[in-house]
Image 1 (cartoon, helix red, strand yellow):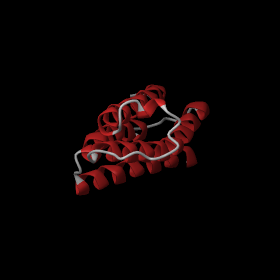
Image 2 (cartoon, rainbow, N blue to C red; image 1 turned 135 degrees about the vertical axis):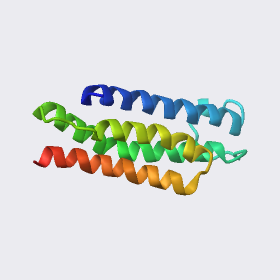
Image 3 (cartoon, helix red, strand yellow; image 1 turned 30 degrees about the vertical axis):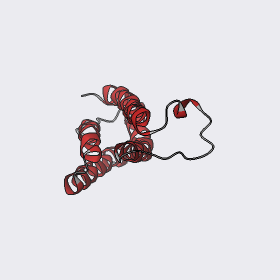
Image 4 (cartoon, one colour; image 1 turned 180 degrees about the vertical axis):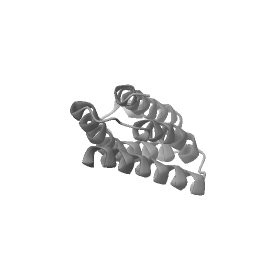
Length: 126
């Protein structure tokens, strides 16, 4: 995949994360809570909403360096290599692994996504 396609997919993946979190929120939180200003934390049913929330937070933390590196590759016309594609694939796999509590594989996939960021950085540096 090209760097631009990966950038577009990163936004689609962010939307997917938000929708998954919202869907689990509608199940786990009192009716209508997501429409409030959320001043007081409500009682939450189950673990999936918390996992979806943490998975989204992790994605946002990792999205920032990805976007910076991907835009850097695009603007400088450096060949992106396999890094952006690997990052997207890992982040897609990460969602169900996090939601279903698959501990070691989830961490391994996260580590591979960090390696993908390092691959992208190396393309910019040299």
